[in-house]
Image 1 (cartoon, rainbow, N blue to C red):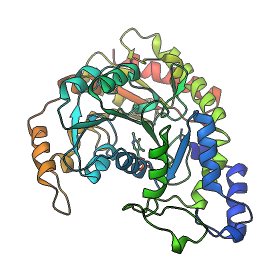
Image 2: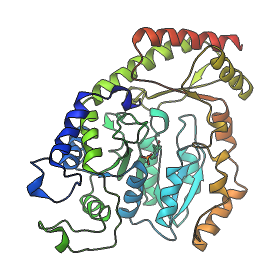
Image 3: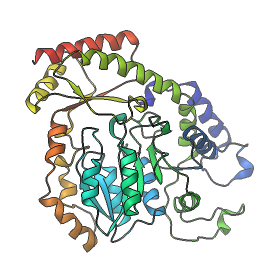
Length: 397
Ligand SMILES: *Cc1c(COP(=O)(O)O)cnc(C)c1O
């Protein structure tokens, strides 16, 4: 990733179809569209590639989460369990639903620690939201069993693990619902866009309606449609969907490049005894969009970060000091800096964060380096990069 590295004729062709008829909206205007329904086509494509009954496109990965939580009936008074290492969209979407985000520790998979999830369950818990961070998956069997035991819903955020699998099933297709992002830096991009996958036909119908102002989408006169319930506008445009359609035709190619590049770098770093790797519950299913490794101490990790800069290595992060992905620097969230008043339930529920600590996650994240695996690198370039990375790490030991 990201998919924009290999933008080309396929995307241009799909886009031109839309530009030629001028119908930029995904619903209606049947007579003018010259048979082009790019959003619907991309939804069918996602359904067949991911082996699910329903895919609903949205305007972003964040709004896909909003829609998923809405169709799951999550709202005021509910709690959603999420990891403390993720992207800000996790708590944004939960807060937008009116529910309270409950943050828990990650384990050496860099995703939800199932034991921490179980310990955080209360009578108000409705959903467990694993986030398959940095290309690889959470312990889905264990999380599924926890959800079944406590009668909770499982919502997979697979935005960073597009194309990965778990025991032969596509990530994003395993929970009660799953979400993807097609923003500009994701494996498949359409500029801005997202999708929710589900096998639940009620969720699918409600998602289609909720994401378009609650329109029932019956008949051919949009103005005459009724509204079975309140909705919102989380629609994707035909222009965005067209780009996504061009990109997804290259999905298998993208994943195979990621796996090749990832393999070369991992092999080089594996020769250094001080380097260890994140645990991957199903190694065959790693989408390989990132390579994450640990150093024995935070101090050495900082030295490696400096050494990478010296050795000319780019595209890596230590998330401990990162504003986007780890609880430590989410001050606006911890202090609930909202433009508008939040409910007493959220305010009260969030008080626990004030003195909550995450020692296990702090240890893991402070020792972790996450390397982006790019699509545009040639095999020669990756080999050269891998040997420079290994030399940089060795220089700190
Ligand atoms: C990118 C991302 C999102 C949100 O996607 P947008 O399309 O940018 O709104 C959600 N979760 C994770 C883990 C992400 O990486």
